[in-house]
Image (cartoon, rainbow, N blue to C red; front, side, top):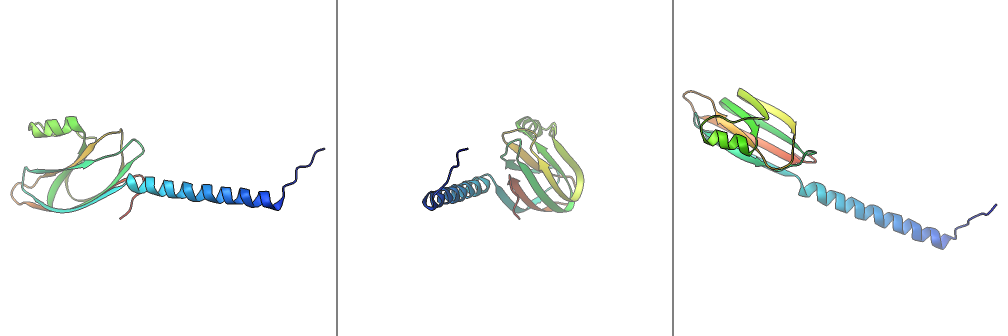
Length: 144
């Protein structure tokens, strides 16, 4: 039976190659995760019947984490280009996710498809403007 022996010099080369590969892989992975993540913080006043649109970029493996606090009830909707067109025409948005009449919501939501989607916050109060505080993160990894 043949025995393969490695000299110490060869072992050091293999260890150095493995270490280099691990470091390069870690750096590339960290850059990819940071490049695909985004975060928004916004405080706005939305009068009754008005809406605010936030664009979300993602892929089917991406997630969105949002938290909304409001002084008056609002409707929160995640939609695509078709829903935005319907909303702007006055017909109301066609939503993948919708929460009506909320003053607080926190949600982690996964993209159903690639491409841009939109988070829409619509003022529901019949009289008073809503002071809305929004925190939004999207990407592969969530940071607050």
